[in-house]
Length: 151
Image (cartoon, rainbow, N blue to C red):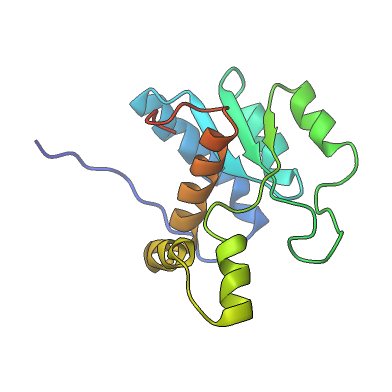
């Protein structure tokens, strides 16, 4: 059996593509019957937009950890977690599934670890592919999505 799927390429990356990306994601999720929506959102910008588009779905927002870019700095503004949860979203605050300890070992001893190899292979297909796989693993680890379910 042959199926055709529409692919959309944006000329540039950036926030200006968020609305259209979410619209396309909802269209595809509805076609496939997917009700668990997992996304990365460090600041909450994408999370709040997704919660409007995916109202009534199980929306899991992976917001990363404090100190990811800068020691002790939280990119999720004060009160944003509460806003997301008030709209029905679930928030995961966890270290990257394909990084952290393995990356620390690599930086200290110069030895690449399996989690970094997985991350590099997934990036060959695109950064979004790597992030999508990673946040799905993190959502399962947090118990917000069942292992094996489509997201």
